[in-house]
Image (cartoon, rainbow, N blue to C red; front, side):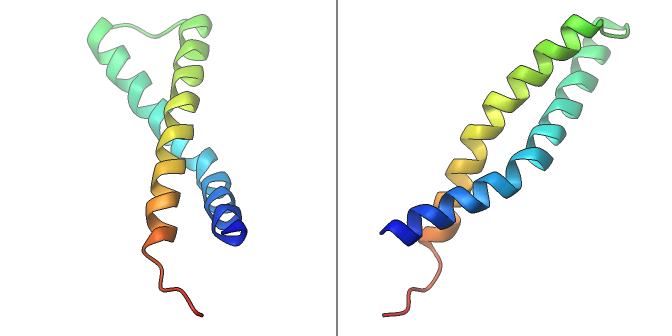
Length: 74
């Protein structure tokens, strides 16, 4: 069970940066289109924090489901 948890955390850690960047870019573009203007630095930082929180949950859930569906030896 310890190795399963380790692999879940490793995969989640590897996916965290690209997933958070993707979520951030999509949310910034959506907000810019909605408001019709460029976002301030404060708004960009707020979107980055939001994207990171969402990415933590998404990567952990995906990693758990992915590793749970891998065939087990033994």
